[in-house]
Amino acid sequence: MTEMLKDTSEKQLSQLLYAVFFFHASEYLLAIACHGKSKVTIESLLISKDYLLAMILSMLEYLLELHFFPSLKTNWSISNTGLMLVILGETIRKLAILTAGKAFSHIIQRYHEDDHKLITYGIYGVIRHPGYTGFLIWSVGTQIMLCNPVSTIAFAIILWDFFHNRIPYEEFFLKQFFGLEHDAYAQRVWSGIPFVK
Image 1 (tube, rainbow, N blue to C red):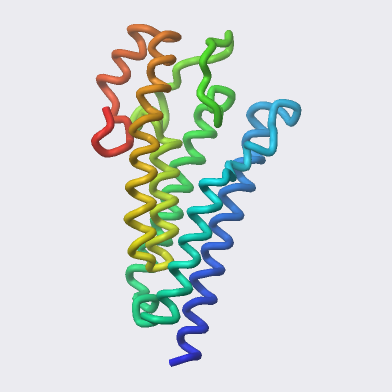
Image 2 (image 1 turned 180 degrees about the horizontal axis):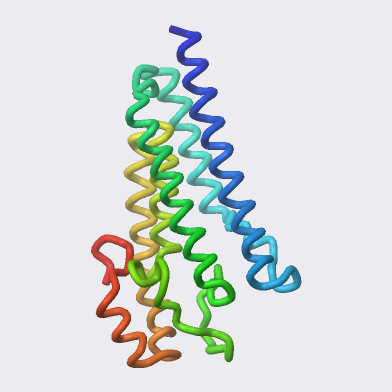
């Protein structure tokens, strides 16, 4: 039993490590590719204090449950579902970045720049905010992959609330920049976050 738990934790934690490393490294490299190295800062790694706290708490949950409820961590159908969600979320987010190119930014644009265009094709033809959708799926997927029930629910609620507030704020500026074109697009295409118009 101890050997099985060791194998389980090694597999789950290594998958998490790879997922987190790939996510942040690729975000940074794609930001450089889209905007040039001179316009990219360390903030493009998307590692904030809140993010670090969430990940630390999720690891604490994982280790406590591994110690006190080890059978909770050995459900491979749940863990593999989480892994598939991590891959799906990563794919959606990276498609968003690659499709939008220079129009994609980690910071909400409050001023219209000449090269800023409303992207409505590719993945943006199906989801208005695929970067947010991908991050939500990826983040919750990491916790399902670890079989962390508390963090799965917490990540879903906290991220939903974050995007519930961020999307209207961002779309206020998009409407200012693109007017009726944005209104028609917003009517036609789902935001990508449940219960957020």
